[in-house]
Length: 115
Ligand SMILES: Cc1cc2nc3c(=O)[nH]c(=O)nc-3n(C[C@H](O)[C@H](O)[C@H](O)COP(=O)(O)OP(=O)(O)OC[C@H]3O[C@@H](n4cnc5c(N)ncnc54)[C@H](O)[C@@H]3O)c2cc1C
Image (tube, rainbow, N blue to C red):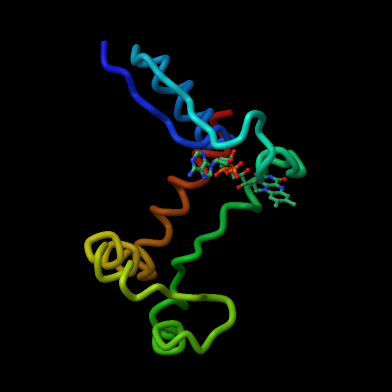
């Protein structure tokens, strides 16, 4: 049996671990802390469609110049990371086009409805 190591026992790590268990993998969940104390410990517990907000929305490309030169306090870009992950970065930009927004949002909303 394949043993999968999941790093980080917040809600994302625990959800991944449970999903992998259901698929029949052996799972080891690892965290640097003894008990979960990070973000998942202190959130408000609200699960709502209003959280379905696309960061890479149609305003991304028109504002790209400001973001690229780190002129907008909302975004701090690590250029080396973007270049090292050029496939991910270009897909992120492509999905920001208005024609792709509806599909992306529909997929995101599904996440809120399957709990
Ligand atoms: C005040 C507040 C309120 C919120 N309210 C809501 C809400 O109402 N509804 C909602 O949906 N979301 C809410 N959120 C957001 C939500 O809590 C987070 O998106 C979510 O908890 C993130 O989970 P995570 O598993 O990615 O991160 P975390 O819960 O931070 O888990 C990451 C884990 O990884 C571990 N880790 C990190 N680095 C390493 C390493 N190098 N080696 C091993 N382990 C490591 C950490 O110790 C931690 O346990 C809220 C967030 C905040 C701050």
